[in-house]
Length: 215
Length: 215
Image (tube, rainbow over the protein chains, first blue to last red):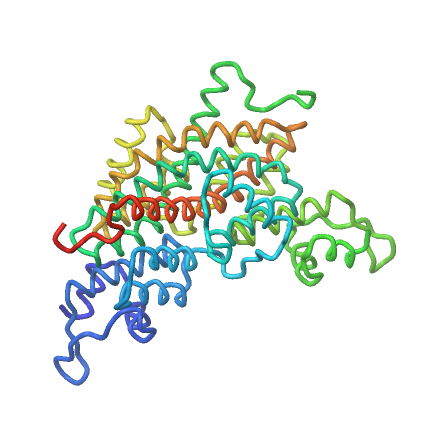
């Protein structure tokens, strides 16, 4: 297909597609004349994936390039892809240097029986959250995290079932990326809906949604 | 305290504090001379909250202003604050207009026994996720969402317990904001750690982490 059709079918404006081509996020099309190229269904699929990462995941162009590199890596693996996508989704200037917060994070993962690498982005992201919690005077928030961890185990199983329910390794890796990007966005939305419903229900059963100053 | 001390104690550079003051994210200090002002512990607390929203939550200045408005609203309520923070955390250009995706979202919330307002940001964010899932050829991803919903119920209980475990209504509202901003960041980090651990465990017990092309 021509670039105009690629734009129409993906919903991505043609100048944006040209930008992605220049930035190497999309492989060049097959030249059919000196200034015209033909694109395939593979281009469309890749373009949609880039769009999901940029629009829903809020990833920078550099971060998208890293993730696509992991997908195209000849020595790719599910594990490597998970690490790359975690790194790409993490805020760019994570501060995980606080020793006290690292200690709280270490104790937390140990309680779950987990052994993440201390230099992995996911662990560093957790340390950054704990550092901020303390800095904003909400150290008590760390007490909620064990409930989060319990909820995350069945989620991880569901995510992995999704990733592995693929017909090929390429597809499994794409599933990891999609599952993480869409999954984080979906979780935020569903958490917000569930919180509101739970608050409504507590109100209906008489538990005050707004505590009195003395309770 | 002087602005320099406010900067030192919050870790926010003084020019950034001045920018927040100009943008109205931080109330003016008490003038002690024509060009010197004094700041209080309340300023420090508010500044740290702004920093958490900007740095960890990735909120725009306009979104932070909306959330602070909800905290300072004389007719504030926990419910209103939840709606405002959901709106502020949602991507700015949510496309929730797709009728087929809205229908999938409606069926999903109905299955959970939930009744969110269709014009709430959380519901619209869910529709946007479902729209993207279909656009990128991952319609099957919607099948994972029931597992997400089941995980979100205990999370919502934990979040509300955190919000309501406050000494005052002001504090409860701040807990909602902190719980959402830190909570979404913490969930993303913990999910990534749990996914990796689960993948390791499956590998150890013989389930292949990378499926063969023919399975």
